[in-house]
Image 1 (tube, rainbow, N blue to C red):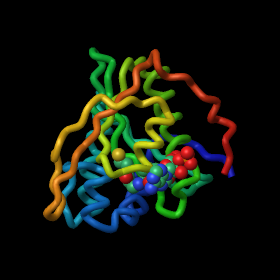
Image 2: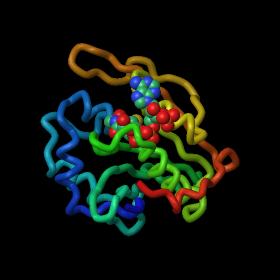
Image 3: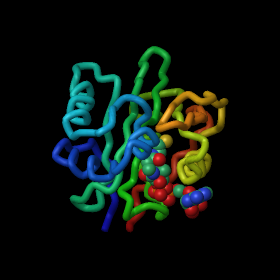
Image 4: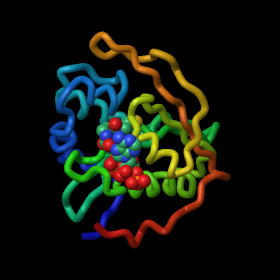
Length: 180
Ligand SMILES: CC(C)(COP(=O)(O)OP(=O)(O)OC[C@H]1O[C@@H](n2cnc3c(N)ncnc32)[C@H](O)[C@@H]1OP(=O)(O)O)[C@@H](O)C(=O)NCCC(=O)NCCS
């Protein structure tokens, strides 16, 4: 079944919502922008900004046929600085560790660097999130520094690694022929 990255369809809000089973997962996925208990309405309200005339973020879905298996955003798009962030990356729990995040992000980097003319794409990832860090490093993101104890979940403070990739560091892979 071919995989395709395309604009996220709002009818799939419920599916993303079903992957967020705890406050820990919510913050790991989305940082501080939502509150627990997470609701579909919070997500729908958040997505509204992507429909503005000059949106500053773009939601993407990774689709296996008609089934949503991944989600991420290009956010904080700053046209003058040619910079943006990769945010809210998540793969359906049943589809993890198959390289799908790498496929999804490769496509979004292609969109950002080629079609959007970006020069820089940054991200934040908590330091314990080994699968995410491995995935970002394999794609060419480099570590820039760490925001120490920048989030609090329960009684724990979390450190956040800042990573980025520049257009000159990015090499487009031919991901269009990948199948699952
Ligand atoms: C992070 C996430 C998106 C990765 O998606 P994925 O499709 O499983 O990622 P990939 O398979 O492309 O890459 C993960 C890599 O980490 C490796 N990995 C998995 N668990 C690991 C662990 N505990 N320690 C080190 N590496 C690990 C995998 O083997 C894979 O490496 P490989 O390609 O060399 O085999 C997914 O785990 C997820 O949705 N997590 C919850 C939300 C989240 O944390 N989002 C990130 C926000 S910054």
